[in-house]
Length: 247
Image (tube, rainbow, N blue to C red; front, top):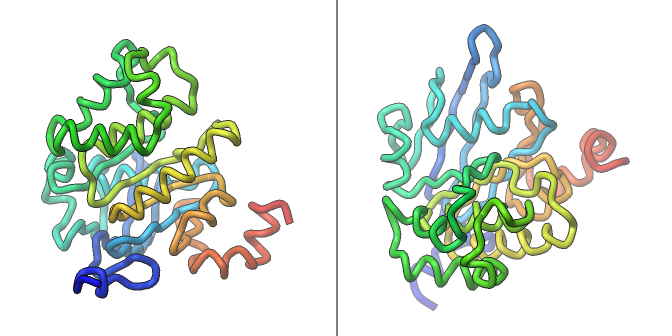
């Protein structure tokens, strides 16, 4: 076994801090969307931020990706996000797959993917990785994005994010509105992405899905973290079971 492999723990993490958030406040005018948020994500982890619609998950995702002004501290790889533009963060390996997917509808699958490697990543190598991850995309590589199903579009959005060769991937609501059969494809894809060495922040309403794909969970309600811990612990939490898992 190599020394690098030996340094990785049982969860696939190395202990190096990728994202550090401290005392984070974010507002939209007079409405405070996040207050006093603390979060740390280490290399190789999947950390899931769960919570209902409107809790502040997308605001958190947009803030760590450099799209929102904030009070407090947000550091990616030891440097403040406030000191960099979003495109700089992309070049440094922070890639954000948004809730809205942001696909180019009248472009085909192949062209959408190639755009994902515009600022970072080897096109041929990354495309081979994405098509291996989601074979359905390769089957439809000549199809316009706006003619695809919601699940296929979500695979394409994740695939395009992966084209940028992320070190840290922010996934915002990847399962929203998807059928169970597509959820399984997305589930297997996320497992494979983590196994490839990518650190992930997963913002997700589907608590059952998030519990399956996380080394650590944070429950966000009304802009504040109200529960946090490993999934096996939170799965048995009475409040989470009654409020989010149907008792």
